[in-house]
Length: 304
Ligand code: SF4
Image (cartoon, rainbow, N blue to C red; front, side, top):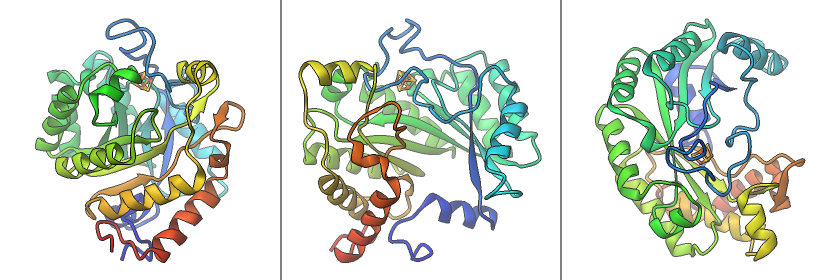
């Protein structure tokens, strides 16, 4: 259905949009986060690492153009030519003066190999002037905005110290969607105190929003985060591989087939990941998800 995949993958969606394979390059726009600098909070989300959940981004000491060149060099063996999406990944990539934002976004877009932008941010960092900028850029270029929901449940959101409630998320997401801007929602599977039903309720909510895309993450405990400290102090069950794979297949079966799936697991680094360590073998996890979808005869949005 989607180039022999049983779900609507980002690869498929980008190939359909641009007629060719598109890679992503991760950039650091030099931002911080309102949940870390004191505007909203100082502790950050409990799972967030020092790099602001952007372990693989370029160096903030370099210009955007230099970072793009560095990242293109890194992928030059398997991707010597062709277009990329410039991904502003770590911290809150709309948390700045609108002139600064426009400058770095347009610098990225002016690179001859950049086909579009992906901008990761928080729903409480999208004031009106930034919304207007995104609206303008979206009329001229291919862009998407990534919002970290993680869960629709406010009780869990408080536990993970997300710093905004569902109402704030809902208002920003719907404003972007009404402007015709593609929205990609991050959700985390395996958060402490969340049941299978809680997770599937978040999926139902994402369906109802009619977002463009979703990123499904496995909860990672990363060294020296608040979550790591809670894990050491109190302990909580980490997801088993088989349990995660079945749950991801359940999610795919329920997700609206129009929603583009950008990610099906986390991207941990062996140097900082405390657990679950099985997730470091990403290839095996993804292959087993494909195999399980086939065995269970699940297609995205059509569970038997
Ligand atoms: S909003 Fe993002 S950057 Fe800020 S603390 Fe949470 S995960 Fe980290």
